[in-house]
Amino acid sequence: VHLKHLEPFRLSLEKLQDVSARLRKDMIRGLGKHSHHRASVKMLPTFVRATPDGTEKGDFLALDLGGTNFRVLHVRVLEEEQRVLKMDSQICAIPQDIMLGTGEKLFDHIAACLAEFLDSQKLRGQTLPLGFTFSFPCEQKEIDKSILIRWTKGFNCSGVEGEDVVNLLKEAIHRRGDYDISSVAMVNDTVGTMMSCGYRDQSCEIGMIIGTGTNACYMEEMKNVKRVEGEDGRMCINTEWGGFGDDGCLKDVLTEFDEEVDKTSINPGVHTFEKMISGMYLGEIVRLVLLKLTEEKLLFRGCPSEALLTPGSFETRFISEIEEPDSGLENAKKILTKLDLDWDLVDACVARLVCDTVSSRSARLCAAALATIVNRIRINRGLDHLKTTVGVDGTVYRKHPK
Ligand code: BGC
Image (cartoon, rainbow, N blue to C red; front, side, top):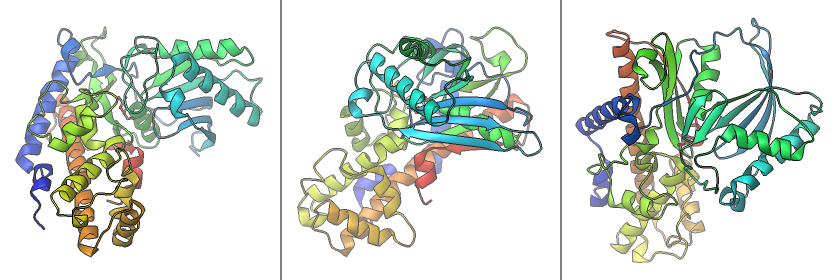
């Protein structure tokens, strides 16, 4: 099937190589001492200077905020030979009004979830060290001092941007006064992913997330990290590649649908690359394409339903369901019915094609960006060939059938 509205989503190999080259330049700009202020790819130092060697052990609490779910965990890293990670965890919902309310309410909610979890695990008396995975761009001053640059994805709490997030968490715990934690280490989710993969596989030096948002981190040579004192060894850099294109350098790649998604998002003008790739946006892109094809009478006999006209109604998980190799077409029919559309078999097949086109573009852009990082590590080390492992996580990566 040839549909002119799908053409702009099909990026040629040459175009992808070009995108990769542009990202390479932006990564260099982000690392520079004097250029990083203006860089759209922020290349944030993480103060993580090594990946695990597998001998680590201990008893920890962990918080995971910024993906699909907020989780509280108790992690016991056991003896070396067995390398068992014992885990108990609990998911706590974060209601929409807290995601968009005050920072104080958000951190009170987090502290309350942690209290409830400590009780259920009978851990309240112990003062355990805590690992805090906070999946937003932060200017990290030390491993336990981290200033939120801006909210992304669905979050927009007042009074947190520009503040030290570790401190806000500690303050909320102290306000309660009924339990305490020991030292805190804060990491981005990409860094957490790289570290947990690296615990088992020492060649893992890249972490990538394709979930609600998208991002990657990797081990950079200290001598290239101009914003941190010291020349020796390596440091993990949180690229924040979601912001790639925020200076307009991806104009030729964006479609009219991407522009619409950006305009109606809660953070217009920022996270251009993320909005073409991640779960928070893919469903909406598909909805806008389906709507356009309907308006042009190429789908659903030219009649959009109330649901199809409603922003957010086409969930990203529908894409995964529709692209299932076996049940996909049946799933497409069910979803189109649920959206109150008057479909025929051709419509269901076209809807499938639209999903495939939008998710393939996402995958290719990720691949191009990942290639940029891998090539950078390879050249840093003066190698012709690099063998490495990438730790990957995120709901889109986990749930999408391809
Ligand atoms: C955030 C990153 C995060 C990514 C994946 C983005 O919106 O800016 O810090 O790693 O989402 O969760």
